[in-house]
Image (cartoon, rainbow, N blue to C red):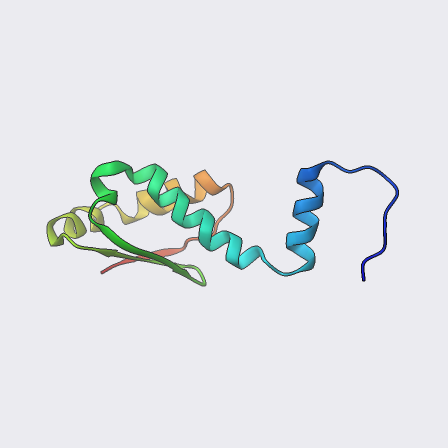
Length: 98
């Protein structure tokens, strides 16, 4: 059982400590990357996005439109840069469009 601490901490600091102590960073990164994709790509791309999955440093995105897949393939480096800037850290190294 964890020790009780008498000093007062902000809720943000307590949640960060909880995530670190329980090794939840990877799971939180998966959620953050999915949310970043949804926010950055907009409704047009999101309607054709069927699955978003982060495995290690590779983002796998399943799309239902082959035309959109081809268009996004031309801008992979820009997408990686935008997602990493949104998250504030380098999580995604490559993108696989399926």
